Length: 168
Image (cartoon, rainbow, N blue to C red; front, side, top):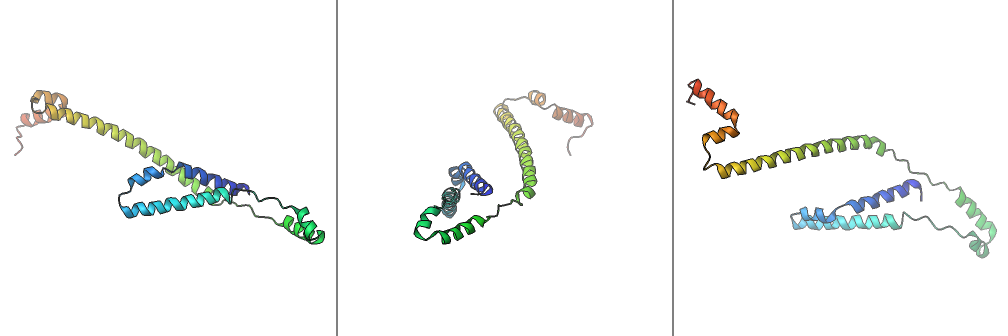
């Protein structure tokens, strides 16, 4: 098998190992989606199996001497010469170089978005804890305790009182 063909088989095999089929199946809600997903999984496995068996093996060498004994050396020599002259073209990947930079840029963007998401998650979790604490203390909290936690509101209320603005 050509180097590029073997590479395609190896990439497909590795991709199949990295797919979390069970995890994706758990995300499906409808029965129809589960059936379609099962069909996709079966089709992927069939193609992957074919790639691993049929296309990843080198063809067995031809035993020319066996055929010379049964057919005759002149005819076998003609076939052997024709067989040796066959040149199977190598696959040249012209697509990957075009999309690799775009894919890499998307990966960088994805990592940045993931980082922002983690930061936002931490901020929101912290805020949830604060709100839960506030909820517990709210019935017994004094205004001074509240303004101690939120000095910007105390300043706003003090300014409104000082300017004789009562909200109406």
